[in-house]
Image 1 (tube, rainbow, N blue to C red):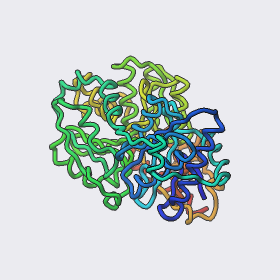
Image 2: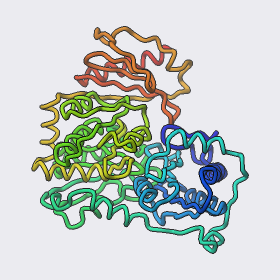
Image 3: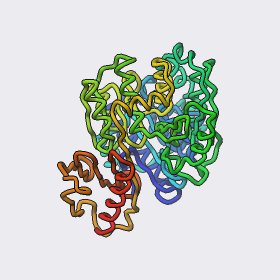
Image 4: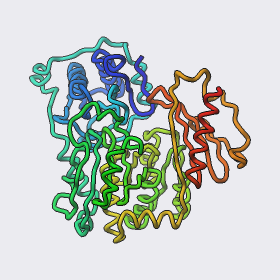
Length: 463
């Protein structure tokens, strides 16, 4: 079954994600474009480093070409934000990215990007789904597509790097003298950060910056349990900052100089302060329903609105398009910024951290210490349970009146079920991209956050 979830359509390679199904989806995208308006069409197509991603991307391009839609196909693996940026600045009708983002090596997927560089929302993907199987897929050969000038191979990286060079203040970053470590998790992040920094006094070192579609046996997701080698390297004391990018380089996690893992729940509020204080972008902050409470606290101190959305960056994208926020992010590591595309970018987030360090004349460790001193610490944890092990739906949970003696003051059902007390919260949500139920918890102590997760697992298994 072909179904678009939280962020695109994903499936297991050779099971659901097949060349035949990619042709079906590509034909539906072509039909969707012609239903929107008449006239010539142009789509940019990119792909990541997964098994057969280049071949799947070419299939998309050749189906589009057969429908008289010009396909501009990346000549190499690229980050998802590079495709989104091209969709906007190249005046394309759509962008298509072949990636399964942070999912395991057995998965691949397809994301649709709108002409304004955002993730396609449900109104678009629903229309594409209604067109599945309605038209028999057409497909040209590569030679025929080139002869008809309906297929063009292009380097998408130059525009991407040039934009990032202008987006951050390199003249200030050049004043830094740092040694940083970047783990690209065998993904499409490659060495773009180094290319942007150019002649800066920042030495960029790498982990897992080679082609390995098995991702070394880990999911290319920047969560702590997948980053054992990175943690070990950072604890050596050789590096001032550690940056981790996911499989398609649109998400970020970091490490401080002592090897402590820092996720996007902390990176987002730090960069929110930078956007307002140093860049003068006094706008709202967007977060998903599983975002940390510290984000609300920072928004309040800055005197700006904090908007809460369902899980999925497409909802954050919508806030950017409505010009309601200057920064927005999701707990899984995706962060976007005003003045860029209404989309997340892990490399851009890393560069802005360097810009903030230069602006404030502080190390990353000092920025973290300042955040914790001002707003306190919140400890965040999550886990996942396979759906096949459940007998009932999350909606059938018997909800408690309290969490470890703390009264449940509110139940949020914006996207899943979130139990909220004064000092902690516990949430259950079925993933839109994987056959799992996620359990999230946050508290002012790590021990209690872990206890909340254990309670959540017990509640799920008692269903």
